[in-house]
Image (tube, rainbow, N blue to C red; front, side, top):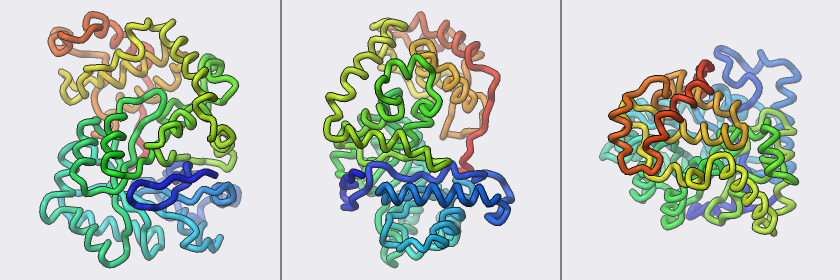
Length: 398
């Protein structure tokens, strides 16, 4: 295993973190640990055994991840893992009422059965409103600072699925020591936020590089061919870890073998540039051949966040899904992620509307300076026809 300093927390984190979002039956309502089968309990134990055996020292979960905190408590307790042998992180969503937030924070501690957290994260600073709830006088941050003084919380950060400008604002307020955000090969729009975090000496944790980063555990053949001789998971990990500004990547394991392709990346850790440069060039060539060099990768420049688009059509996300489907045959991934938009219950975590209906004149007026202004309405309609019909719900309740 390799380790990196997690910003000004000073913690030496493994470059892979165990994410607790995808444990067996972790989202089944009303389920108790005793309701799991012996095989399911053995699977969870095997995931933790494998993560510790390979040198992972960071466990990351959230109050909103179904039974994840409980499963961690029960398995870690059964394995009698020394508490100082790993760093524990959970996340709780900010609330308008800090008393409600503190109640949920206590529930998190009870579920985890812990005396302290190495890392606490505000779960989902996706809009200015959540940041305001945290940093205003008497807000949620004052609760957390009090818990820090009591020794129950050591380091404070936040996670986000929001617009880059909101992430940068949260970073630049100076109150946080680390950030969990999205950034990987197929979505590099948050690089400015990573640069802002680096200026603040903050830890940078990459959320879901394998699932949200393209469902790379089930890649289409065209993507696999472009990434050869590496598996797409291994390429994507190395793409992220090439940047010293990035410190750890989440592995949301559902079985012990889910670590295999990630661990394969470690063999190339000391020669990342030479390993992935030809693959990256091949991917760019494949995408540009399918989409045009004028479209990829510059299509996203100047695109407004969905909250600024008439009808809140999730313009940047849908155009990305269309590009990946046309360029790398990632239609299955497109249907999966577009279904989250169609599901309509994602709040500001997976916000915006699908592109089945939109006000074309208003959209064209908004995009008056975009080089692909006249193409975009047709692409949006094509994307809807390609991806529609698989509306899905987000897992997390926060």
